[in-house]
Length: 252
Ligand code: G3P
Ligand code: MG
Image (cartoon, rainbow, N blue to C red):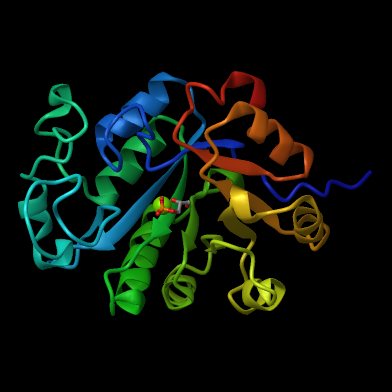
């Protein structure tokens, strides 16, 4: 039979790199996922004040990095001197806010796949998508294995559109919470290969329709192995998890 495989990527993906085992969106998080033989990581990217893309989930300092104010008001060189690990555990104190470029190169060297979530600061959808797209397109110029390419995702259609323009060769997935009624039109408009949705708002029928339309389907954030098994039985292709220690080798 002809292959209908729409997901050439790993099926278990570490959420924010570190999940619940190491500080999110840091090199230490990626190292933990690698040490535990996870095939791929998801992480969040936004622009620092100097226009350099960096790894960060929140738009404000305070939760994972001590300080106050918009993350995008600080230069990447300042962020690199801040502590993105101490909040998680003292043994990670001094872990820097990494640049996208450093993390992509490290993951690539270690054979790990990546889902790069473009998470713009408010009002920066287009420039973030553009800069991230251009950087990844350049880093992967001449790459031959399509399964080794990163996958962009974003809740922002504008950011995905800008990434598409700057990086036509890098695939895209649309991030949503609940799958919207017009999901197929929205995937088509951005020429996406996949849909990424909250697992607790998905049902088996919707999963079947998305797969029947030929799209990849990734769910977040799945931390229970029994639920993981159920989602895979519905045809879900991949899971983003904080618990790659629990959702382990039997699923990969
Ligand atoms: O890509 C799945 C997930 O990362 C989306 O939610 O808030 O953790 O970035 P969030
Ligand atoms: Mg994310």
